[in-house]
Length: 338
Figure 1: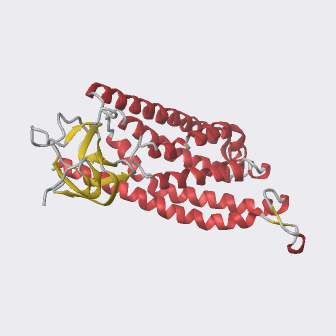
Figure 2: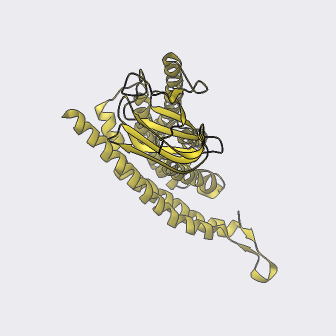
Figure 3: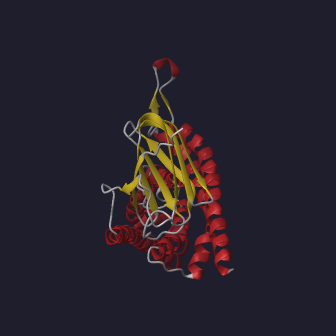
């Protein structure tokens, strides 16, 4: 039986390979990777030789990651493969003579200089984002520290009025941390970022921002201080990573400081939620109107009681995520040391 190969078009970036397989209405798509370097493709579909099974094999120039994603459309199969090392390849395959079925995908093709410009633009954007967030949280941290030394415990009661505007700005900017991984600008997972950003914004905008009675409570000081302490080490770490710089002490703080501070931060947030419950019951703010037979309204405090449970579930998810990042980081450093 004749082995049929589809037309395959390829393009690359520094970190990824893109394959476009000209196979319409593809079914039973099977893509496997052997020894981190050889891609095997099999599928049933309509190609150059009509409706038939098609297959091809590519031995890449360098190893690639095992996580291969693909998407089948009516017209083609799109495959995305991540390189193990982010760098430009002189060609796609290990063999110098390219296979007859393979051609450049000029719709996605970039010259190395253009790809380099794309990377620099991405790094420049990420560097500026992390720099702005670092400066914002540093201002909050220094402002609160100075006021604590000068005023002592009295500074606890006006934290919100002196730092809330900057905290609003930083937390609205933090929404980009959910958007960036969705756009593929960073490799981190979307869900852990969403948990942290959404959780903090509930505390800031709903608990503190909407209740005047909460704004003078000492818990605001502890929540803001713990948040800013975490971020004045996290943001410069990522900022320097954009320019390929690693400061050992900063790296140590980034991968170890969260261990005590994240749980403490969630405890402080939980205290804020608990203190707000009677205020929401009294003011009926955000209460849900009910039919006449069931009473006047359902207090928003019931929603917050459920949110308290979700907070600690979110802490567990984020704690596990950060622990995996920490393990991966130190495993990588040990490998480089050897």
